[in-house]
Image 1: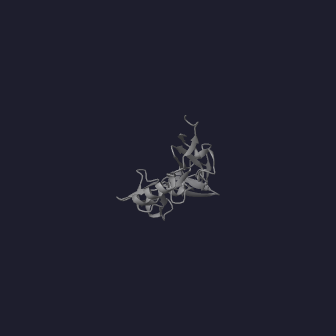
Image 2 (image 1 turned 90 degrees about the vertical axis):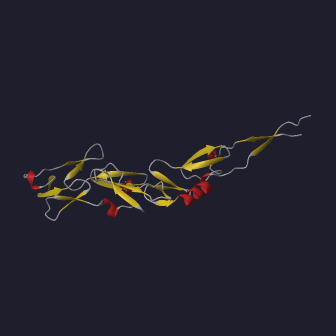
Image 3 (image 1 turned 30 degrees about the vertical axis):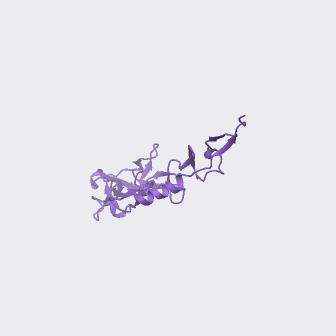
Amino acid sequence: MAHCVKVNVNECLDPRLNTCQQTCQNSVGSYSCGCYKGFAYNASTNTCDDINECARQIDRCTSVCINTLGNYRCSCTPGYVLNRDGYTCDVTSVCTNSSLCQYQCINVNGNETCFCPKGQALNSDLRTCRDVDLCSSSSCSDLCSETPDNTSVICSCPPGKSLAANGIICQSKHNRNSRLASFTERLVTDVDIQGDPKV
C-alpha cells in the first residue's frame, strides 16, 4: 500500500504560482502579497498603489513637496535654495529691512518679499501671516485633524471603519476583511509524493 507525504509548496519561488506584483511572503499551504517601501497594498485589486506622501502631508520637506513613484522630493520657493540634506531650504538673498515681515523677508529678483512658515499663509497686508486650515484641503475621506505644530494632517475613521493602507481612505472593516481573505489567503493543492510500497 502506497503512502502519501504532504509537502508545502513555496509559491513565492515561482511567479507562475503567485499573483503578487512586488513582494511575496510564503506560508504553510498559502502565501500573501506585499509591497515595497513607498507603496501600499490594495487588497481589492491585488496591486501596489503609490503612497502620495505630499498629499498625506507625511513628507519632511520644509517648503515644497513633489510626489514621485514610490517616493518624493523636496523643492523650494523663489528666493530659497535646497540644502544638501534634501529637505530644508536656505535664503539666497536677505532683505535690507528684516523688520518688514512678521517671519522672514527674502529678496526675490530685487523685490523684498515676505514668506510664512509651513502651515501658514500671507495676509492681504503682505507682511503678516495667518494659520491655514489644512483639513479644508486635505485628502482625508472621513475625519481629519491637524498636528500640534499645524504643519500636517492626520486622517482617522469613525467607529465601524478602518484606515486603508494609503492612510487617507476609510473603509468598512467587514469589506476590508473579506477582500483580504479573498486575495491573501490562497490555497494551493498539496503535492502527493508516492513512497515505496510497503510489503
